[in-house]
Amino acid sequence: MTHGSIWVDADACPKVIRDILYRAAERTGVTVTLVANQALLHPRIPSLRLMQVSSGFDVADHEIVKCVSAGDLVITADIPLAAEVIAKGGEALNPRGERYSPDTIRGVLMMRDFMDTMRSSANVGGGPPPLTHADRNAFASHLDKWLARWLRDAIRRKIRPEN
Image (tube, rainbow, N blue to C red; front, side):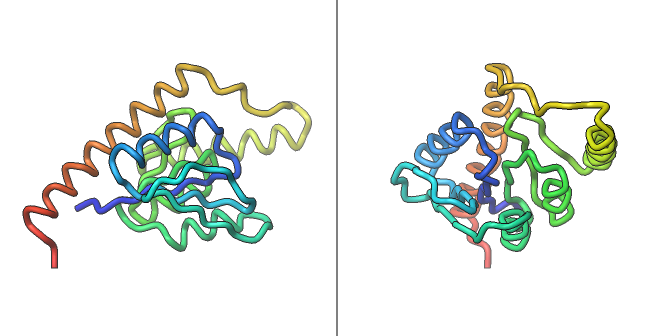
């Protein structure tokens, strides 16, 4: 049964996506934890947390992996982090609305590694394109599906408390 919290790889998460998550936390009471190596301005919402970690390569990622549990949702564009989350029984959603799954993560990792090789050999340049309205809608749709499951499970736990 899913207990579920939402963990956000917040240093790289677009503000518009964080705003969607703030509204979800306020509306549903789901715990949303922003993990970042810098202070972030955020609204005061009882179920919203900020976990500031020291700066350094993948420090926030390692903290998320350490804290995530089966049934949790992690918001990240970091594909290796998504793979570790899935291995622990969590779910991973890209800010562009791409849901990573046990069935797709290996292929996504292989494509990422291929693109890294291409970039390092100067055959491909530039970063990702700007976030589009369609990306935001896809993200919100996947988030709503996860929240609906989370709310159903929360109601079941109240009816039949787990020991």
